[in-house]
Amino acid sequence: MHPISAILVLCTSLLAVGAAQAAEPVPIQTAQVGPGLHVLFGQGGNVAVSTGPDGPVLIDDQYDYMVPGIEAAVAALQPGPVRFVINTHYHGDHTGGNDLLAAQGALVVAHENVRARMANPRVVEALGVNDPARAGVSLPVVTFEDGVVLHWNGHEIQVEHVAPAHTDGDSHVWFPHAGAVHMGDTFFNGIYPFIDVFSGGSIAGMIAAADAVLTRAADDVKIIPGHGPLANKADLRATRAMLVTVRDRVAAAQAAGEEQAAFIARKPLADLDPKWGGGFLKAEQLLGLVWADLSSAVTRE
Ligand SMILES: [Zn+2]
Image (cartoon, rainbow, N blue to C red; front, side, top):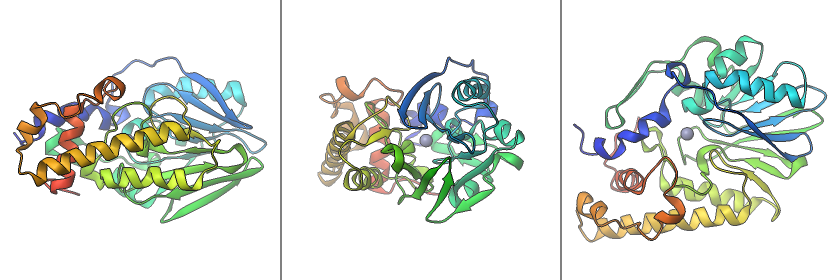
């Protein structure tokens, strides 16, 4: 077994492709973010919904089994088919609904690395991941390198690629008219983040992605995280500070020549766990990812 398999095995479920899941739908909760902009909380990544005269646009679409609930929630906001789906990155809990929505006419838009990664099998021995390639209508049909703007529903939806953070295909989606941004999985609000170091992600990139929003956004910006509740700048600052602490502690241990197992065994994040450890990623898993990231002991695809 790969040395970090034991630490990372629980990450596998985060990466699973929706079509392979035999999970039960959960009820969708809808909250308004701003004019013509809502967020849907269900299972998997948070979904943003733009509504207006041109028709609904979704940012991410959770799993295939969540699509009926998502469609019902969207229909309650605005009747009519979903016209575009923008994927913030390629993970299955953000793209699992692509197939069903595209089959009903939605056009999927994403960074070029999202399409490339979805179109190839994903095998990561350390994570126990062996996912088949996605194909056909589930793949983005519109891809971009740096960004793209949808002029839609009477306003701009600005999709901007950020330097590798959670993966190497991350985008932030800005809604200037609503004073809001969807950060995808470059931001987990209130819980330890999964950082997909096997897909080009890094903790330095996660910190930089937070800085990009903190620098650009107005003080009253409404931030939709990939996971967790709707957030503000203070929430993002707190997450950034936590990431810096984790990075510094791992770097210090490595600089001191400490062994990974001994480092993790002494629970170096015990003071952070009460606030951040209640999510699906536990301290030892985050530490395993960051250790591999900072020591380059990871096979990047
Ligand atoms: Zn993700």
